[in-house]
Length: 305
Image 1 (cartoon, rainbow, N blue to C red):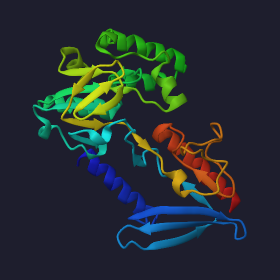
Image 2: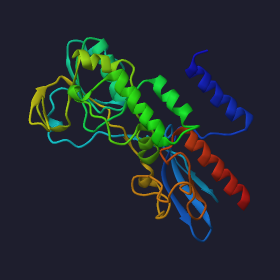
Image 3: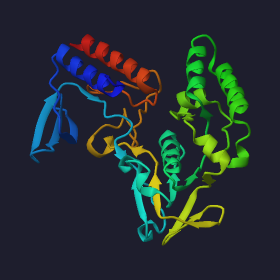
C-alpha cells in the first residue's frame, strides 16, 4: 500500500474507532457568539445542495489550517498577460510546457519542485526568488531534528549552515542568498520552512533553471523585474502560498485571532480564546504543534464539562 493510501486508511480507521461523523462538503460561511444563549452559532453551506445549515455549540474550535485559499499577489499589468498564469494548486505536470518559456514565482518547496519538474520536461524554466532562503537536503533536516533533542536551536542552526555551505557551496553567485537567521530558528519564530532540495539546485548551477529577482510588473508577454530587466514568458506559475479565510467568517472575536488568522496570544497560550473559542494548528509549528494544541484544547474543555 502506498503512503498516500496508508494515510487515507488511517483517517478512515480514526473516524471509525472514535465514532466521529464528519460533515463533508460543507463550507463555513459565518460564526458568531450568542451572548444570551452562551453558544456559538455557525452557518455552513452544503456545497452539494447549496442549502445553508445552522449549528450551535458551547465550544468552537477553529482548525481550518494555514492553507485555506490560494493566493496570487496583485501585480501591475497581470490582467494584460498574454500567456497562461495559474496558482501552483492548478499545476499538474510539466509535460504541456515543453519548449515554452515558463516563470515560477516563489521559492518555497512547491516552487522549487515545480521548477524542477518543468526543467525535466524540457521547459525553458526561470524562478523568481524575492527573499533569502535556506536550502537543505532531507538528510540534513532529519539530522537537525535529531540534534534538536540534545542541543539548542542556535547550535543546530550553525551545524545546518555549515553542512549546507559544504554541500551546495556559495549560491549567491546563482542568485540565492542565505538568511542571517538559522533555518530552525526561522521555522519556530516565523513559521518559515527551509527548502528541501530534490535536485533543483543542480539544475540552477547548470543553468537549466535561471534565477531572477522579484517581479515588478507585467506588460503583455513581458515580465519586468525589480532590477529593471524584462523577459518574455509563455506561462507563469504562482507558487505564492495561501491566505487564511478565518477572518471572513469568524465574527466578533477580537482576542484570539488577528486579521490574518494568526493567534494573537503568545506561545504557549496561543490556542485559547474567550467564550469557548479555541484554535488548533494555526501557530505555524507544524504537525507536532497542531497535536500539542489539540491536547491542550481537549484538556481545557474536559475541565469545563
